[in-house]
Image (cartoon, rainbow over all chains, first blue to last red; front, side):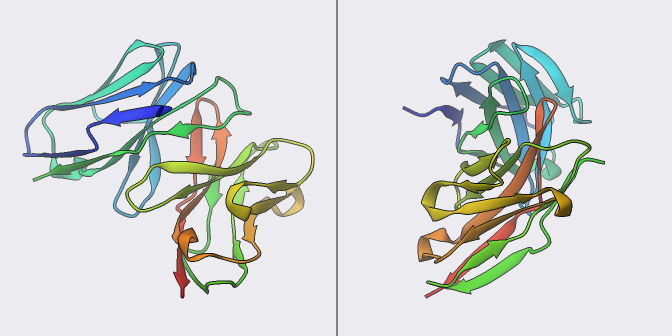
Length: 113
Length: 111
């Protein structure tokens, strides 16, 4: 029973298209995140949500729009995809607070051609 | 600024040898620290965490890490590396509604 699940695992699409990545967690956590991992493996926070409310938007272009329909889901929609959007996107969740670890999904490898 | 530094981008060790991966942090208070491992094509798995108390923490897969406040370090160690330990290792700490990661250390294990 997967704790944090993302779909799809792989996504290949053309420039200019719009795509979505879905994320669900069954851990009962209040806080969810999107991270971007670039080709050098660097992990950068994009968004964090707590109880469905956007808390952090780390200077991400407006083409990226997260949506949290409920505490267990955090989806990421990307408009007008660009070559530079190619990366691995990770969803994660945690309890609220500093003294708690994050649980990560398996990642979505997005390739824009 | 809050940051995590992993000075070694790549490390190669022989199977059975000991391992130490370095991590230094910059944070205004006592941080909550983590080590994660990422196998190829996989997500991040928590190896261990330090919140308070004993500065030597034990994790899964035989890993341990030691928190040294005076050196702002949280180095990861393993006495004897197995071929299956080859992966990317990330040090991180928790900030307000985010986790801040180091750039990672790629571990290669020679048979």
